[in-house]
Image 1 (tube, helix red, strand yellow):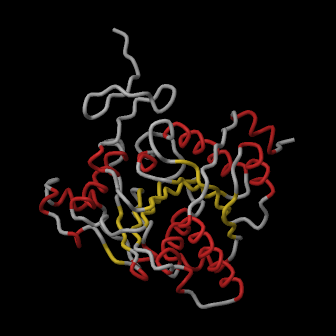
Image 2: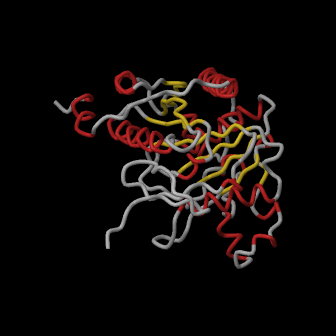
Amino acid sequence: MEVTNIPISQTGRVRPPDGEGSVQVELDPSVKIGKAKVFAVYGKGGIGKSTTSSNLSVAFSKLGKRVIQIGCDPKHDSTFTLTKKLMPTVIDVLERVDFHSEELRVEDFVYEGYNGVMCVEAGGPPAGTGCGGYVVGQTVKLLKEHHLLDDTDVVIFDVLGDVVCGGFAAPLQHADRALIVTANDFDSIFAMNRIVQAIGAKAKNYNVRLGGVIANRSNATDQIDKFNERVGLKTMAHFPDLDVIRRSRLKKSTLFEMEDSPELEAVKKEYMRLAAALWVGTAPLPAEPMKDRDIFDLLGFD
């Protein structure tokens, strides 16, 4: 019997696929986030997404916005510079009550971090046993059940690595804008290209659009600029490779808590500028991803 890749919604309705070969499940309308502005932060593993997300959350909070940051990584270290310790994940606390979510209290899975940023670690299923998309869905459902999204201005999803499966692409179903963190090197840009593909696929059926690129841990941006020009992306912010940024993670602190210096002041101003621009709103970028071979040709390897 031939098996087709036709996605079926949770109400049984057939809908257009997210992309070629997609077997993704349609987002349950009951778990839509609502009025908050939602940003999903993606990028190559180890590129500094959590550092970027946490400092961006603080920048929004300093603009007077009510912020929730949701870490979507089994390591559950997205928010530890905000809370100063690793927090239990949503999956951890659900397991404790045998997945009877009605038994949970807000303080079981939401923790207040620096400057009032509310922190949630979605976590992930045990290795080889489940899908990250389920975890994201359960997290948003819990936040809605406890009315934590009613008065929230900004939600930031900090997502594991580059997008290689529909589960970790699930935050794109909730987001208004996807932000890509990258360094000025081939591997980071190759991952960025895959993320552009995933966002384009999700944009067929959801509201998410590309917001822009955040250049991180990079003193130069020539390779990023070359790729952006080819595919139709723009760099929204640039954070150089500074030791103070590395030390902030070691000290379990956001950059806004570190001892001030001229270089740190410039970085904080860049985060504030980025938050202000995102709050006002950015035009969607209709980027077209490249073929893998073309990236090799574009970025060298002579």
